[in-house]
Image (tube, rainbow, N blue to C red; front, side, top):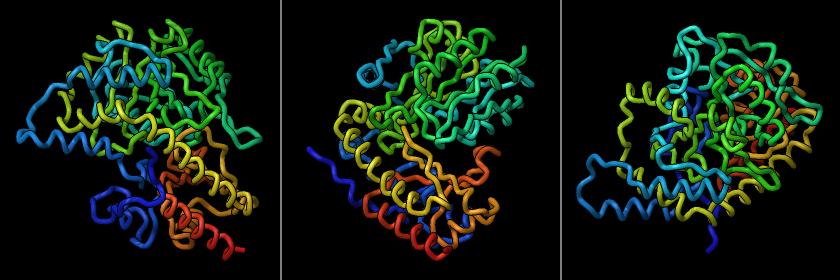
Length: 392
């Protein structure tokens, strides 16, 4: 069997967030939205067919998550990432951001400090601030080749007795890094020495391009297991964010008890009946689809990379190792952040995420979601190329 990513269904009248919010975010409907991180690629049939099958039963009521759902995820995590744990180590959650909020309340107090590594996904900041904690920025280092790395010396210099938690983005959104074992071990060492818990957002872990290999933070060592809360799920991998189901994995019993104390205040319950069958089908049937999806996504990235090479004085694309989010260095255009955003909206007719929303380190950058059909990707490249040519 082979999957076809050349075309995708139209989403304009489906309440899709990226289309519905065009007017409020970009002051126009006349753009192609390439911002929020879901795919303009059809959710796979084996997921939708499982949901249709469940709907043959006429009652959709409260339902416990069956163990078969978590076993499907356990098998997937073991086979794809070498991550082995028990069903008893898993918590249901409707989103990684919700899980992050629970972790912040479980492992810190009001006024405590929490580390983020910027530029990073905006809810990392918002979750800390909304819970009355203090954001500590350990900015990533931008290297000469345009890639990013951890700044361990800066990290060490910013930790004190009030630093309780580190929010790790792995693989990293938006810079597309897959952290190497030795890099993660440096983070681990610092956190162990300072009694810091790690919340590891690994939602993009399946979207890694060869020869890179995702390493779950908790698998580094027994010590790593003892300080790690791992957040994973199918939302990004299979374009299933609308099913609102993810999971949290905690292997240490003490951390598990502390997490549960905050978790039960939210009343997550057991989620949606339809989400259960969709989640299980994705993990059970998704191997081939994912292999072909990654090939398609990387081809889209290469098209964008070729365009950036043609206009390298204006835009440089950050080398990508994972995710479907291109981090574009537009500082060569010499525009303010406001005018840069205006260029993409008015000239290229594209709605991107402004880099500044990921932290001040994102000034002069833009994030473009290239998880689209081949036809749509060709249109994106055509529009951006035309705008860049006109600018010359």
